[in-house]
Length: 347
Image (tube, rainbow, N blue to C red):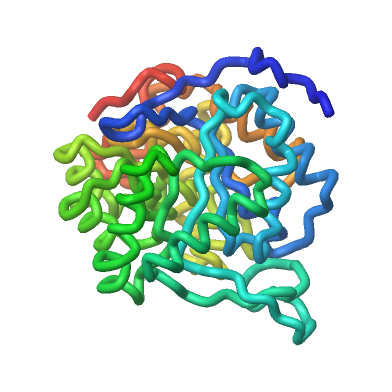
């Protein structure tokens, strides 16, 4: 099957290298949780169209996990990428949850995914669990390799993650099975420990470095700079609040508290007064920090992909950041982007 863009000749997006290795990611990445049925169903056609649109827009970094839709995200992403030139994109998946067949029926909405509950998740940060998870991910993806493997949400498994799972990843990297390793979480303390106590290439931090909250600035981002490692930022919209701050908006996987909703609405007023949608500022904000290599968005359709790319490419006036600071909506010392999407940041 041939798709537009298979030659890799799509529009260019800036790329950054992860840590001190040789794996590069486009500054805008495709997070594949949504095409795995996050919250509401997504059809096969919609999922493939979302990935195709990202490819045609120049996105060359794609992230998935077994957790997303009980493997559906990996299957769909693999199918959409299988006929693309393999050396022209970077793919990450995650380990720490293995999928066990389940015939009890029902759906997976309790875990956030509108898919049939054909499997159940089992935490496993053992060395064998890491290897098994990666092998099963490759089968679902239908690809011969992934580039970056991340320990997924080891919050309650810290000892085993550092004692067994991380050394297994290090061994896989040494063997050339994967090219880069790291961890992905919603909290910063353990991610900081990975940066200071191990030889990870990158960490994925979701939701903790956004226009609404900058907790990653305390220790995580400085540790990444000091160690020469990279941070990938997910959850740039804080589950949707920064994309569309309106009653009923989600924040951190739940309904947004009234105070945060009012703050996001004030941010929207500031950015729109300068002709900039709030989601454009939210998308680009994390890239102002020198440790941040890429931001992930999770579109569920070609239209959402197209909008994300359009907002990402917007030139943001310096006055947007200045007014957010003047209004007390953004701390004065937080670095912000300057110029276009590949032009770094300033304090």
